[in-house]
Image (cartoon, rainbow, N blue to C red; front, side):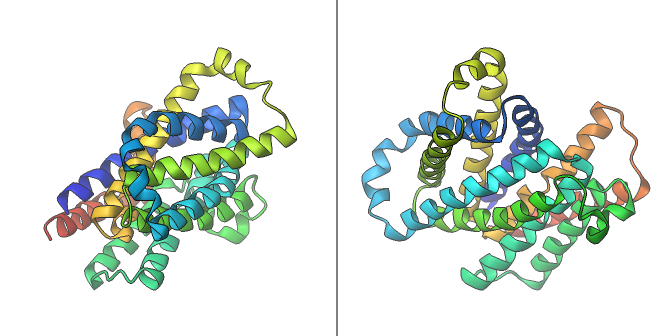
Length: 292
C-alpha cells in the first residue's frame, strides 16, 4: 500500500510539471503533433522495458482490451484537453478538468467493485473541493453556467469527463497486466490514430522542423508525461483506483503552490484554504491507505 501511495505522489509531481510543458508545446507545434510526439517517444522509451513481457501481456484478453480502449479514449481526450489549454486560461480550465477525479472514483466504485470506507470517500470529496478552491482565482469561476462561453471551457469539460474514463481504464488494465505494458500499448494505439489523422489532415512535413526548433521541449514533455502515466498506472495496480486518482489529481493544487513560492504570486484567502484542505486531505488519505 505504501509503495502505491509513493507512486501516486510521483505521478502528482510529474503531472504538475507536465501540464506546464504541454501548454507550451501545444502552443508551439499544435495539438495533434504534440500528441504524436508524446506517444511516439513514449512507445520507443518504454519498449525495452516491456519486450520480455509482451507474449504474456498479449495473452491477457481483459488487460489488452482495457489498455486498447484506454489508448482510443486518450486520443480524443488529449485533443480536447490540449486544445483547451491552448485556447483558454489555466485559472478557468483547471477547475473544470478536476471533474475527472469524480468520474474516475464513480467508475471504480460502480463498475470495478472498489469499496472505499466512508472516511476515504469523505477525504476524496474534501480533496476535490480543495482543488477547486485552490485553482479558482475568483468565486465566480465556480459558476459553470457563467463560464460556459469562456474560451476552451466546453473542450475542458468534455476532456475532464473522458479523462476520468481514461484513468479508470488505465487503472483497471494495470491490475490485469504490467503497468508498463499498459502505458506502452496505449501509447502505440494512440500513436497509430494520431499518425493516421495527421497523414490525412496535414502530412508529416512539419515534424523535422518541430525537432529543430523545439527538440528539447518535445523530449522533456514526452518523458515527463509518460513518467506520470507510468507512476499512476503503477499506483493503481497496488491501491484502489479512486485513491490513486485522488492523490495524483492534487497536482493542480501543487501548481498553485509553485506559483506562490517560485513566482511570488499573490493568492486569495479561499485559495489558501483550498491548498490547506487539499494537502491535509491527501496526507490523511495517504496515511490511511498506506497504513493498511
